[in-house]
Length: 318
Picture 1 (cartoon, one colour):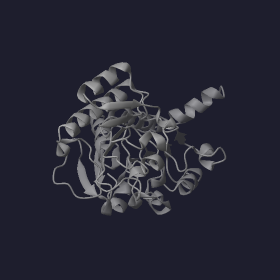
Picture 2: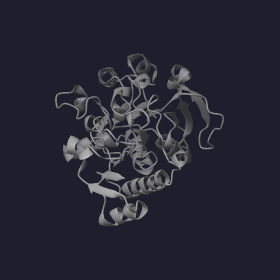
Picture 3: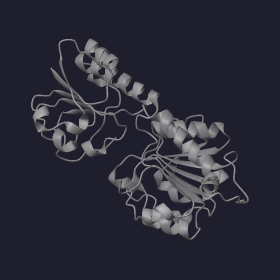
Picture 4: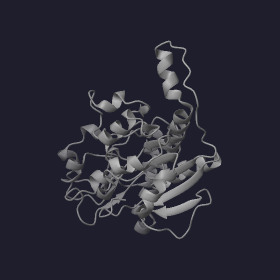
């Protein structure tokens, strides 16, 4: 069994993985430098190797990503039928949900405006602010990250409405209402925060379009930490410039990087970060990924395929 490991594993991480996979051959390589020759005889890939390279790995049996999102690997022709795909879902919960809470407070307290004033050395008051407490938070995508954000906002006193693709029987105690996407148009006008952590599936493209932006309160905020193409960014720019919504915070855009001449850079009350809510900047995140990877490796090698965490249905994309 030959394993290609492309995540930035430390020497201790390597010892941990090799201790699990005794007798297996490991090839360690930076994911950006992997080419077709590296995957000719590979059975397992640990890391986000280019989908184009993955598609020409003839004997690949299992791919473990270091990302929570896996949509590039769910496209037709990337993985052979029968190849197992598992994600790092759960590893980014703390990092991304804390970014979402951070921008929730920033938008409510107008911190983005005061930061601009500081850069300009301007002592200027911006008037009334809002509060997270007693707000209504609409969470689109109640996966692992969405639940962590919902729990934090609920603890801060916000009324939380969770929106999922299909109906769930059990409602978490930190979610005040649980419903499905069919009711989205009825829910948006109630929300002070429309927070998105949706997977990159076809049905989620432009799920927040001009029409739905028009349903938001003038004081409401849009937060997107899922996929950039879930929002019609030109429609968002118009809504911000015309003052039809209170503001937005985007850690994801479409395209990425956001072009230097894109109007959203200058849109009022728009906080943009370069897809850094996740990544490995929080040490805990990568420790979580290593743990998920090691546990899945142990399950795979013992034949307990059903017990592997975060198995993906490539037809659904999650």
